[in-house]
Image (cartoon, rainbow, N blue to C red; front, side, top):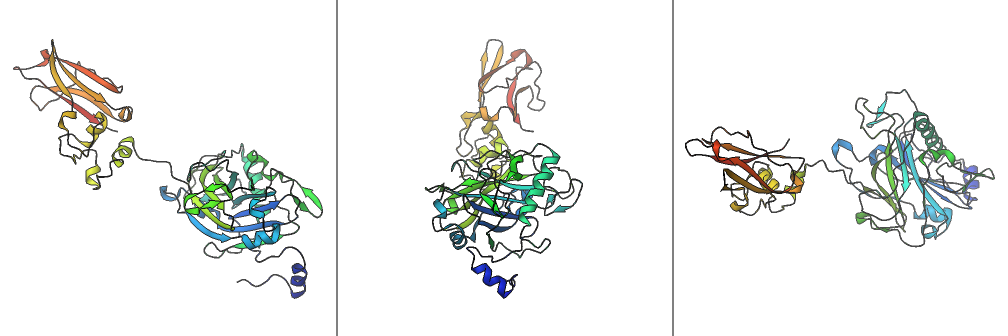
Length: 402
């Protein structure tokens, strides 16, 4: 534990107040969780560690859930009373940033200058792993810099700027009886030196970064359990394209996950579910759970041995795990044509090509004078019998994907 920052006399005075400090070293770039209560001069700050450790898009995968990383019950009870979890006068929000420079090329942990982490009030339980709030949008470089400066002002109030944050996610807690907290764009709840302070610093986000307490539980968040507060965390970047930087959507918040606080004061982070990068074919074949070998999931593979590749089955709406040779295209003589019929699945339209070809020797295949529809549903393609040579005419459906 770090040594106390108070002398014995100062510590005695602090203990006589309704608030105490247990640690005051908040490092630049940390994500700070801030609690306020209407009518109270106390503000509770909880350092959750490096903001970038909550980033979801590292190496194309989403961060693991972080469960019970901080226990705030004793601290919040001391500051706001035992009913803090169900008190509608209690508000909570989170924010973090590294620096405010508009020209710096410094990249820290994959985040460039003025990369903001800001919470948003979640509207309902919704789907765990997906946002249920309005993504904050920042309009200009000036707004980004102003918001970054405001976050740093708040997060460095008690901090020794530059002090290294310990490894891991140990709680760094403080209750301030005369806070200048600026994580408030809903209520003028914070008092500084006897005067109400309206936290306008985050007005750039359009309001709503805090969530209000409620007498009933907010809902169940899977591995995080039943919670009282749930804040969606967004990452906002001013620039991208810098070396070693994790790109994001410029000036619009990219959802990273949800910070939750349960009635026992346990803080967890439920990571966001990454947007799928799978192709429609990959998503389709993944649905056949009996096909387990990677090689059998390839587009050219035929795990059921019916002569139809997986990609062909995808285009025809077949089942790659059950042999059914009759699922392939059918060809019959119809007047002066060899009519080729098949049914194309809607899922394959736009991401695959399907072309009827003909041949007279099973070696050279052509599609001249043959038009294959690109829509879904039942299709019939007519190949003129005049294309035959020595009474031979063969057809096939060739399917490919980009």
